[in-house]
Image 1: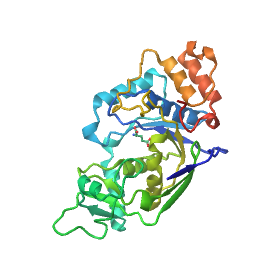
Image 2: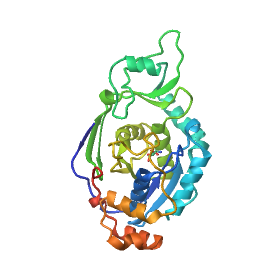
Image 3: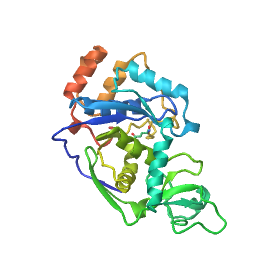
Length: 308
Ligand code: GLU
């Protein structure tokens, strides 16, 4: 995947609907706050809507406690979303329908490969760490093997788009990713499918999220085209790293947000997003914070990477 150049700027805004889509696998940390704040401000600054979706499709990894903690933290930080929260765990029928549509058109195929077999194929890994698919089952399952996962056929697809922060992105899906999974061997619908189906269903026009998801975007755009769905505008925000240079996450033991003192963390998140809040904003109220942040939001100031 090539990422190259400065971001394009949004000009007219007939209609803007954004969203924040956390996975309730643990509490929000500072990196999630940056993504939530950036997506919310980008929507509110143009009078747009901002929705909240709980990405709890991967039931074994998600907990009700984590979802509650996320809702509580967002509330404590003064986030206000439009409408009610969408829950992916209630949407299996929609995901099955999308997969069914692709099946009818021969665009997906069952795959018997195990993780081990894929790792052994030595084609290397895609930018998100998954093995590049060698095409083993695309023309039929090997004798005596059962299909475990469902994969989308990727032919000679080059996907290009202009990210509003990261600039021009180009991906040769066939060589860099290969046919990718839409339904996992354990029956769970894959992130790539559910995010595309849900964003389209909700009428999302602008996706603003962490740059850790940039590698997934060409897949999602290709899938949108396969399903005849519109492609939203994308902006991928800088990813916050810890002192060891790792992305903040549950795996790297990122500290949960401190919901008792939201202002200092909100102001720090604004700095990561390249905004220039006055020094005394940290002593203001939540209302004053939001009103300053919305009226001064400038995506053009957002850096491609967080400062070290
Ligand atoms: N649920 C994903 C996450 O928490 C975000 C999905 C998205 O914004 O597209 O990393």
